[in-house]
Image (cartoon, rainbow, N blue to C red; front, side, top):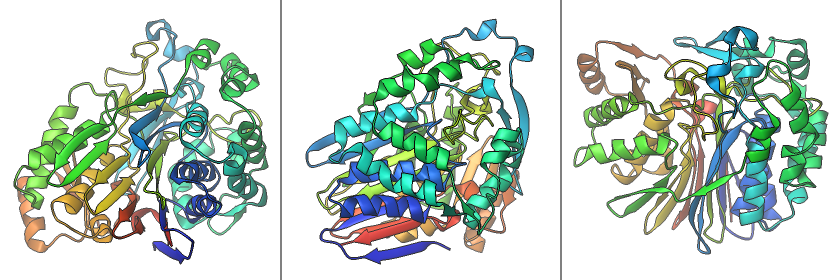
Length: 478
């Protein structure tokens, strides 16, 4: 059940994320006079605590930011491939192996182990976002997350469900098993090691992480592919967003080298003058054809947060740790990513990358700017990100639906000639869709498989809507 809280404040703002604690952290910072970028950074750090199997300092992500004093820009803090030549790696000599995640109707194979980790990019993103956009001291922004990690959070059913899916990773070694001991629905879970890490990070700079003790230890790990060169050379990159105008709306999203935004834009272009379900499916099929080109994608274990403040600033941030590689970083209380073990990014087989290249992702934090309404939105959901956001944006700009209805509408997903259908379509539409796609699955319940859109709206109306599929939380305040 989605939670929606209304809290009074001196100025209108909106926050939506995948967890009530994540949303509350952003709200707290806004109440302290911070801007949308302070708030989204606080939300990201709280997500390490409240959503630790979807979000981690060991992963990577993207922020799209805009405001009256800030031209739209994307901060890309996703990982690079290692400097080590892939051709020199013997897969039998490194720590790399498959496990299976169970979503119920669908299963996915994941690869984990030390050799599945690319360089962690989130710390660089934190420092870059703070330096270029924020107004409050980083220590103040981090404090809600530090407090929560020390006192503990109550594990909700959604996070417990994610833990069930990723149980083979959690139980892959004693250290990982120990960190997540007691991570059960209704239990209070503490992470004092993460609190200490965030406290140190909030008083440090880029070099503390990338040229310090943590980088040195990770580079020295046997079975890992990371070297000190990977840490020394890593930087957050700032890009211009990909843009499309649809009617009176300007859509801004994640540009290449990532593929998600490009595929969202291509689907919207494909619609032309038709916006019905069959036209939506045809646009998805077009995107699937485009994806067959080697566009590397990665972002399965993913969360998203959106913030609008009272000054007109918008922040949309999507974050991923893959599924995590099972390796807990020292005494820091977080798991490294498994980006090099994502099948989607290794279209020619594992260990076949180009050295020192920014990895591509399906993650697509997005802004939709209209004359009377401005939206910040995004979602987790792996390859479903491109179809989920496409459908929600279509409902907003072409269907003229309210934000709540656009997010709660039933979804479909087309991939590799297979159609997945949520419940909620009319019998007539369902019959038409199935008739054109004999290879299909009809889901009996709504599921996080179809993403979890967290979105805010500012303008003539201020609203915050979080997706019931992922038990998120939205707060609006005035």
